[in-house]
Length: 460
Image (cartoon, rainbow, N blue to C red; front, top):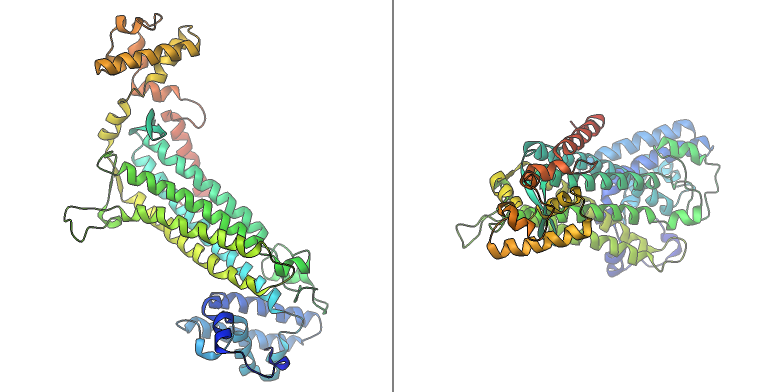
């Protein structure tokens, strides 16, 4: 491909470091797609005849079939990368005509195009997987729509919430993840072809038409920037990383709530493993892997940022390090998204234990403070009075709702006989009747809204 300038072949050591065919083989179909479009662009520019472009397209189609039939990258071909393998096979098929295809094109704009095509397809697949996980989360929420559990701050019981409200918190995160990937996709979807090595092609290529033929929104605006740009990789990795962090948080809470100490959730056998030495163990490995994979994916983001931080314009071989982090992050997030879906589908809720925990630890203290506010007590005074009542209740080993009226009035003179109805779990939930709150009616609306979105997107 570039040997005319050299008298000696590359050393085996250099080839080991330089050759990318073992991993950029994933781009082979994208490379062929881009090459077909380039052949027709050359035809429109007068470099190839229409018939020559059709011959190249037919030969590339056969190469695509050949590549699909291979079990892996053809390392023994001697090709340096996927681009040279496709060109090699094209020349073997068409002879001198095959050598014309690279006219006006560089591997710099070629690989950038391939990677954007691949990234676009991969993002679309992740969006589908996110929607499938959202549907599983919604099923979990609807199945447990009446169950109540404690909500936490600082991992201390705080206020009661519906289990469905807890599950819908993660759907809110996943919806944001979906939006971020869609937003990243907009910047992925620009076509580098025609930028050549760095200065732009010397042939009259209609870059807008070429971009449209490949499904891009338009051409990239600056050739020098284009071949050096991997912002779209960083941005995509960032969206993948944040999604992985959300799934890690979900995994952590599933682990905590599924432990014997909490006993809120029980995992199905299909997402758990056993112990090689302890026969009684049922380990929630799926949730642990959801948590563990996040570090790997975030590491790929950091790797890519570090690679880019000192690069001069335009293309540098350092950019070859963009593919493996992106490929692996996509693969690992796909695995975790599908795994999280399976975990949701295989997790049952111990509603009785959840409700018992929600009623303990004075989670209705805020209700008592709000009750006093309703009696005309300034909130800060009400807060102090309830704090003193909690101290008394702890000393007596009683829940707040078991205190007598006289015991209440020792610190909160405004208390009346109607206080007890204000301290039930049902009252606590019902009072949170604001958009986004845990009141049953609001959670029902949130679930219905998510289902409508999924229906529109064709998921349910």
